[in-house]
Image (cartoon, rainbow, N blue to C red):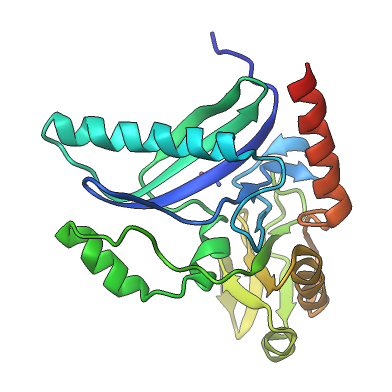
Amino acid sequence: MEEKLVGEEFSLQALCDGHALVPSPLVQDHKRAYEGDKGPNTGGMGSYSDADHRLLFVTPQDFEGALETMRKTVAAMAARGTPFKGILYGGFMATKDGPKLLEFNVRFADPESMNVLPILEDDFLESCQALTEGHLPASLRFAHQATVCKYVVPMGYGSHPRAGEQLKVDEDSIRQTGAKLYYASVDEKGGHLYTTTSRSLAIVGIAANLEEAESISEEALAFIAGSFYARRDIGKPDVIQRKVERMQKIRQG
Ligand code: GLY
């Protein structure tokens, strides 16, 4: 038996040095395969984060509540003599009764790591070193930029993914759009790339606001040819606005 939660999911990833918990910007993942959050659950089709490091449908109280849940967990681990050092990723649902913890993972989230790590202004390795030595700073510096990540996946991903389809990736043109390109699961044969049954690659647009970040991701996707699927709705302003309105209705009961 599980409690049914109605709301919008958000991800909070933090570095933890055994005592201090240092959060990164909030991100929303999109687990459903098809646009409009329909279809089978997947490993995540894409994600976005906003320039102010918050999400429009997450209230300041939701954010503080989620952070408090993570801080209490870390404090309890330290109190029982097993302090946690590493990355703590909380998957939360914003509901009318506040944020509810869905799951903890002791790793960065995928795709959400691709939203936060490219805008980290502090040195990542030095931060990891501080984490292992138990003296993380009170906060890490992240650029005030919005990010939109879209995964390119094989056709049928989520139910019957079609492996072995050739993908033509024009890396130079993608680079010129300013987008980042991260390969995930592709096969290379004879100098050509082919889909596997898993997600193929991710494109991340980064800009001063979500609208620009989303259009950069779309511009870059145009330089990938082949038989693939990507959720085009992720990070689009009207889609985010609908999520905000949905949460307002949920909160009003
Ligand atoms: N974004 C879901 C996960 O990393 O598990």
